[in-house]
Length: 165
Ligand SMILES: [Ca+2]
Ligand SMILES: [Ca+2]
Image 1 (cartoon, rainbow, N blue to C red):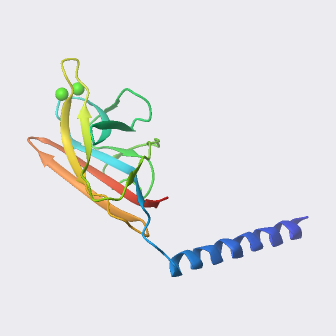
Image 2: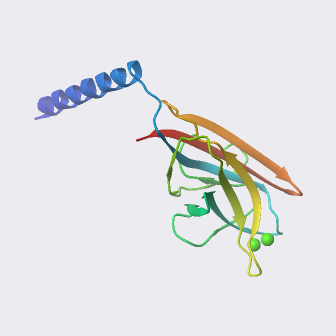
Image 3: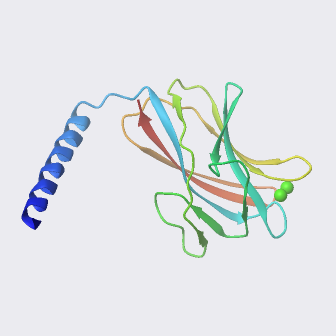
């Protein structure tokens, strides 16, 4: 039984390996890009105590929610690191994890896609940070970090862009 299982696992690994090799050899840029928020860190807040955070994308007048996955906001304190996926949290931050994010795909046509982090307020929400992305066709994952230290508040984001079909 154990032996059978081991053999089955091995053949799965070989198939996965050959698929991967084939994918690399014949990689064509994908027509779509998936936007994945991996983590963000609240180094400094807009308000004292807590900010209530949500993250949305905007393109062609259409808004989509990245984080949290449903409506609402997450209350964060100074040095909170909200972990979703990817690399861990830097030393000295408070690990908050782990969470999910929506991962919408967009046509890789180079048109502006704006990612905005908001602080939820009763009297109108504050857009704290804008991260512009111009999705281009890619054939493998791309990673980038955005560090925004503005007017006293300071947030850092880690994103992953994935080829999508
Ligand atoms: Ca506010
Ligand atoms: Ca607030």
